[in-house]
Structure formats: C-alpha cells, structure tokens
Length: 141
Image 1 (cartoon, rainbow, N blue to C red):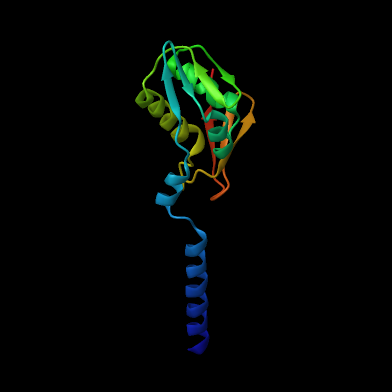
Image 2 (cartoon, rainbow, N blue to C red):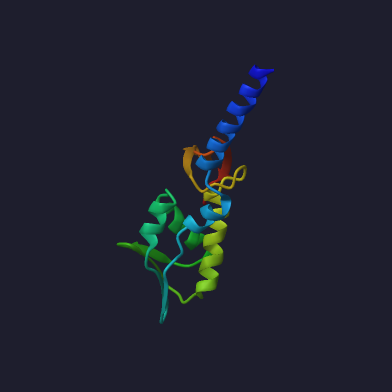
C-alpha cells in the first residue's frame, strides 16, 4: 500500500510542476503585440511592424505579403514600418492581423503562439514548440 501512495504523491508533485510550467491561455493572448496604426491622407502606417514580426517569430515580408494580398493594396516595408498606400481604418487592419495570427501563428491544437513556419515546397508547415504539432498551411500566392 505504501508504494501506491508514493506513486500517487509523486504523480501529484509532477502534475503540480507541469501546471506551473504551462502558461495559461489567457496570458498567451496578452503576449500578442498590438499594432500601432497611424492613418494619414492617402496612406496608412503600421509603426511597430518589425517589432510585431519579431515577437511573432515571422519573416516581416511574409506578414506584409499577407496584409497586401488581403487588403488588395500596394505597400512597402520602410524601416520598422509597413506603409500601405491607401487609407484604411485601424479596425480593418486589426481584423486582417487577427486572421493572420489565427492562420499562420496560433497552434490549432493547443492555441499557443510559440510556433514557427517551415517551408515545404509551396506549402508552409506551422510547427508548435509547445505541443509539437505540425499543421500544413497554404502559401500566400
């Protein structure tokens, strides 16, 4: 009987340790950086674009291509900013940003944002560092 209770005690200690190592999902969502958007006449600027790309562990050109394709706008990366050559509301840009995060950043299995993209031909593979899941994703054409 004592060996069974030792296993139970060890199991509970290991379970407590695992729960302390795992960051709750609510905290993870707060780690996603917000876009700093400035609307000017005939253009819209995302001021912290490279910082956001770095925090999401993504290539800035990949995110920029997604934005430009989704919004059907011309634009360019200029230093730390993404310049879109048209006026768009911050709400519109944040909706596109949320779609990017949902499709190319967030793990569909554990909902972690600790992921990276691998290229396999024309297909991207979303690899989660938290749970190890590998999810194929369509490329941006």
